[in-house]
View 1 (tube, rainbow, N blue to C red):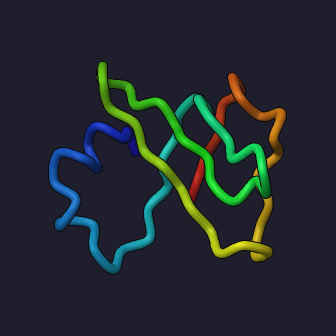
View 2 (spheres, rainbow, N blue to C red):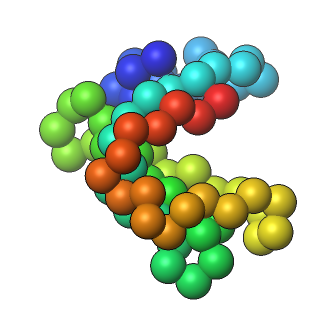
Length: 69
């Protein structure tokens, strides 16, 4: 799913399993506990945060493509 579609009507996707795709534009440089994905639309992004220790995003992932479910 495009990030712009999700952000246009987020309530439509509450309690639903979705997968978004985007280019990684930022990653937490302390613990790898979040990453930001660029949207397909200008000036939009999506930040994914996990509980510390549950999962670690690679700190070197900036610039790579990602899928998140």
